[in-house]
Length: 135
Ligand SMILES: [Zn+2]
Ligand SMILES: [Zn+2]
Image (cartoon, rainbow, N blue to C red; front, side, top):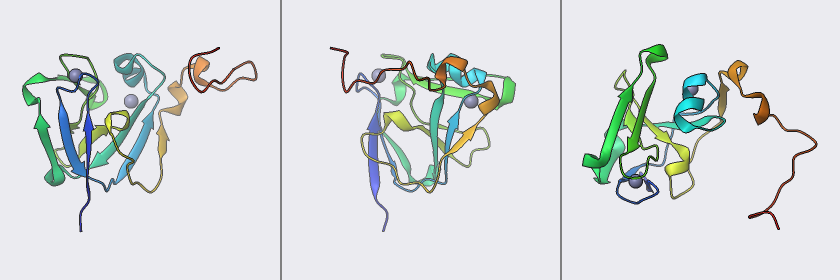
């Protein structure tokens, strides 16, 4: 019995659904992921292409393929959010975990390219934590 979960981009133009059963979960600190996210790392789940469907907004998706490391990024042209794409091998849908609206099921996370991690991403005793904006 397969359970489908949904996700969407920030502006809501691109919406998709995928079976809630992921083979891999990669937290990637590589330079390419830092550049395209503009942040510390990418969080990508790998799902079954046969159990994936774009519900709306496929015309709003732009795909960028980079020569290094077979790197790919797909994003909504309206808001820039990362959206799922078929990997170059054609055997997995790569889902930016933050785009999901429901909790994904996976066995474990793999942190990769840890050597390229931004130094400022490491925890420091000077860091402060707030539940919302600082007050
Ligand atoms: Zn969007
Ligand atoms: Zn990466």
